[in-house]
Length: 415
Image 1 (cartoon, rainbow, N blue to C red):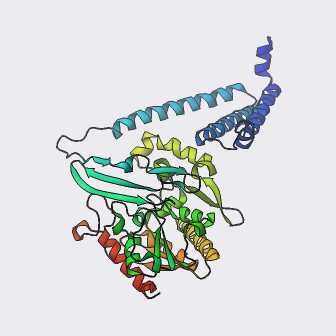
Image 2 (cartoon, rainbow, N blue to C red):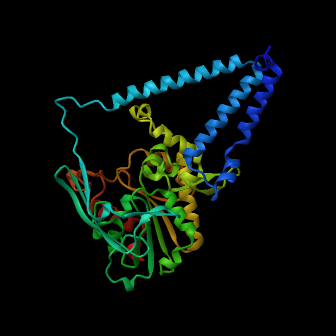
């Protein structure tokens, strides 16, 4: 009997090899490999997924050998994995064809979106605190067309702190501030500087200087990160005032960093998580703070099967997701009040915001947040001049109405 034949039949030696594989899989883990090969202590999500797949495969093979004491069982396992991989590969090819079917001959082609202006070149810039921001101290032009039809042609003026400029009358006479946080609704996507919500609020509340900290794609975590940064006193000269967070449905998924958000624009947005002691802490970005989850999202984002079924994770928002988003908003409120004890913090639910407002409302109220709920006030109808046709964002008229509600309900015009 040759040495190789003896080894193949020696169950004790096979089980020792299984133990060795298990040890190798457990030892070559993410923290160890990060410490050995990453100078900054970070690994790309793709690398983390590869490490975990290697560990899982090595430990599984080791357990198979340890429990069976037979290479035949290992070969059965490997054969099953190869067949599974081949089936997935074939399914991906089938679903690729399904995803790229030519439209029916009588189908009208979907309008093609065209973007132009300086908005398309250098407008968004990486930022360690917020994930991304706007190039400071510039005026950007933004043109959007659907086929040859103009949707809007506007200008965005940005100050030295990367905030959208809000023009006001008599700035010297305004001794309090009003800070606006949110996404594209606050920023004023598709509108000029004198059409935004902060502009109309400042026009109606002459004692307050408005500041626009919103930006397209932002969620509540950017607000929290900004308020925790301690930079506001250097950027806002007024000693006290009001903060308004404008909620829209999409902010819940942004707070979670869902698969869709991560794979489109949100990979580097701030990532907050709850510790075992129920403390809300920041863990870098979605890319760095949860690399395994983000790596899996990235992998699934390339799957034709996932694309065909419009897969998103989480597929359905649960009560805990709304509670988590409310925790971030409440933490922002606390950070604001800690800096400005005499200030006021409001959550403004923008009109026509679907069902999420109803689901998050109990959690906002439980946190003691002051909520201005305008969800049912009106619809963002282009026919009524309240929604930008071909875009979906609010018009200046919609913002003017919301500003009137805000000022009337908070008494800002009397302060």
